[in-house]
Length: 191
Image (cartoon, rainbow, N blue to C red; front, side):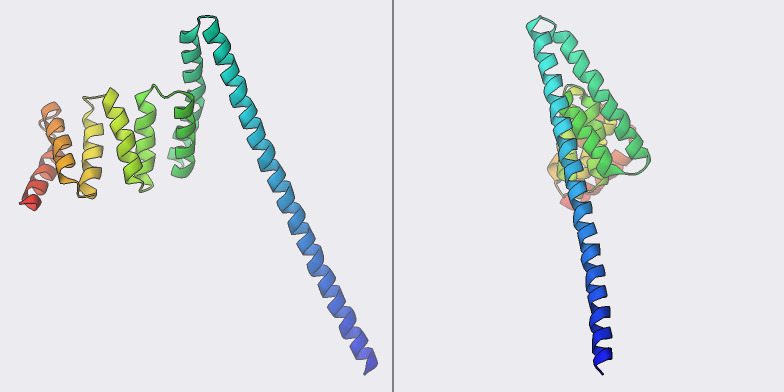
């Protein structure tokens, strides 16, 4: 009887040691991941600071135009990665790259248009509308931009705003069948 108790205790001790070993491995793995994340963030911060310092130096030298070009070129790398992510249907990742591009250079309306598409796909309608609005401030005659924003307003039942965009759209593209149908549908619903 006593030998059974000793065997049970020994096997229980072995199981406990095995579980403790697994826990220790998991904790060590998490520490490695946390360190890696920390160092990646530090490297990104260092790169951003380096870029800001370079831009400041160029501006001091009276080369503001070159600084803008450098910022835009830097942003295009993120745009390329964003488009690749879109093609792979990874819209969260695409949104991250687009936001990074806009932080680097916010003067290109195309960046806002692409981010609006990603936001729309992810169901972030308010963010998509905001980005389409910024895009349309620069590209006022974009029929596609007006259509996308009008349709988002329609989905949110913001009839007046949807009608305004649809009317602007039909001035630019009077044969836009979808816009004609949606405008008619809203007016019938509103009555």
